[in-house]
Length: 148
Image (cartoon, rainbow, N blue to C red; front, top):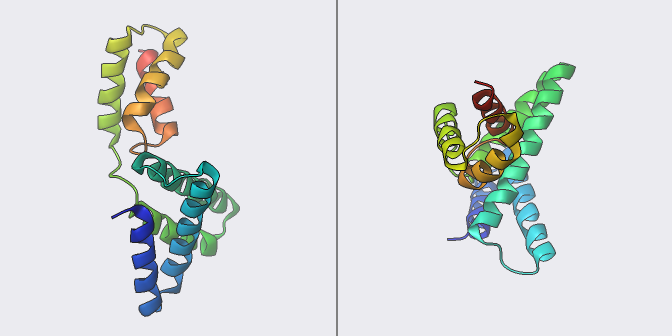
């Protein structure tokens, strides 16, 4: 079953259950997927669907940080609920230890030895963790490991 079909069935369920919060988020996600399909001009591959969900999740995460800084508890709670709904459609996220392990393996593979090799390492790591780890976490882990 494709992501679009999952979103449609969950949208119907949310309507039947009168779950307005979930319904709103699922509608936004479905619209984002459909807009990406129109932009690409073809049905999305599973990788492209994951990229759309990752983008939606990242937007909410950034908004959450801003709402926390502004002291907007009402928006913080709403955004956290939205993030839980988006997480349902994303692949299982890697732990920090898993990311560190992948980064260290990649550093060995590309023969990196200093921060000069940062771009080379990031270029090799990101396809391996696509959709399964936050880019900021990967970026920081690569910096930490290269600075040892």
